[in-house]
Length: 490
Image (cartoon, rainbow, N blue to C red; front, side, top):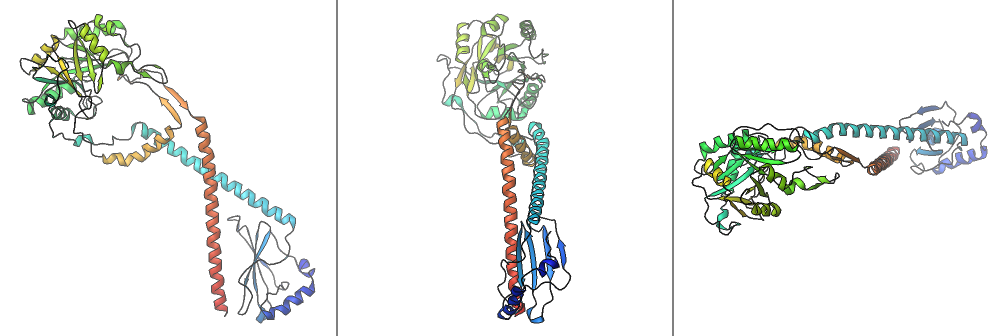
């Protein structure tokens, strides 16, 4: 802190003091030595206001001067408050020189303040980021509701695929059943209730469906009860379930009781036992979506369902058929395999509906009547074909937004953002509480490093902008104050 001693003042050139005194009559400032006790005010709130020294001197009434000295980084800023007829409203004064050790002390003190302030802001920023991660990531994993409120969806249109499509088998022109042999409800991982699933099927031109929720027949039984009560003349529901493990997905149709699920990776013998048990229950076994099951998954570079049995193995184990169209994928190889073994295998199609969308295929059957038993008899006798629309049906319908989604989505999006700094691969879900692949976590250290760098740069930029605008506001306030003071002095 700088304070001029009386010896320093006495050591000044008296002639310059006399000259300053004489020039006061010509509206110049006199820098006479102080004759009264000095009052020092200190403030450590910021480096800009780190030292304030105010000195008041009692000069003759006509030449009274109030000098405010602010030492900033070794510079002495002198603001003059003049009486009427005084000099300019501000400026730099050739006041007493600041000793070098004083300048070094002020510089070190300001540098230390800036360093501690920056560390404080950086630590607070890191704490905030960690809190966002702690809340956002768990919410992103399992706390954000579906964006769409599917409970409010209704399907009030009617598609007639036979009006513009022909069966794959050109000789199969006489049929009375349009079947969807694979669909899901809210009893597993579908978004439509059994009631809505039936309404959706009717709207898309089906008059028979096989509801096959993962690991349970409960959804199909609920759908069957609804259809028999409200749409018995429009649609027939066949009960079933989708047997789901890490080796294969199979539709078990025409059964009214759920089949116990074997371990996530069943052996060949265990799979054979499941097939035989379904046959003993009077049901049929249809192998689902082989292209999907065998699709390569990264980073493991292995099939989605590892060790998926071959078609030849499945034929030997006694399956009844294959799903040759799943959603908009036509499994040509399975279709050819069925044709090659037409005396033992049947071809079916399924929408595999989890979310309402376009329909692409309809299994065509010419049954004696549209009862579940009559349809199943035709499937057992392998008398089917199908319609295929690769473009899919219209219209489509978007679910209205779920209001709870907007409430929690910001946290989920924050979690998704931080998930971007690492790739977490869990693999295919087994529907038995596990995953079919070992979890892989690939963190992006380079991206994290850049994040820290940009965080530091952002803090520095914000600090510079803060102090710049603070200085600007103080400058404007000082100019306004000086203007008001001069007006009052006049």
